[in-house]
Image (cartoon, helix red, strand yellow):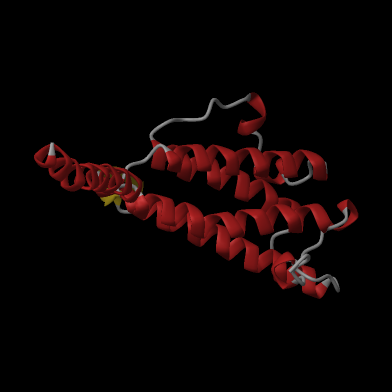
Length: 192
């Protein structure tokens, strides 16, 4: 009886520890991919908040004639998200006839349409990144560049996604400040 109790005292904690280690490893095994997702989410959220708070009448605004309008940036963010995340996850989004329209036409779409497309593109990206394992980040993909086909790691596209979201959020935040608006990331936190 004592031997059985002694075995139980030592083996049960070891068994529980092994289970916890296995669970922690499965969570950590995709930690790098999840880290990229967590870095991109604030920028995507801020972009949606920014596009939503800017009046529709300002979607033609551009600080200088050579710069992009707010509407153009919104359609570009949606298109770039779909393109990058299709490459990241290996799953293409089903395109519609409107996807083939020129960027200048898409930039003229109503504010609600542009926001819905940005939101849908961000949701598509979340699904693509959540489906990745850290091991897949080292996969070699072939991409076309100005100098011809180039082999790059899948991780490069995750970096591009986060960088693109951050860059365009900074661009929109600057436009908002010119318009006398406060960008979402500069708003006071409520309920804190």
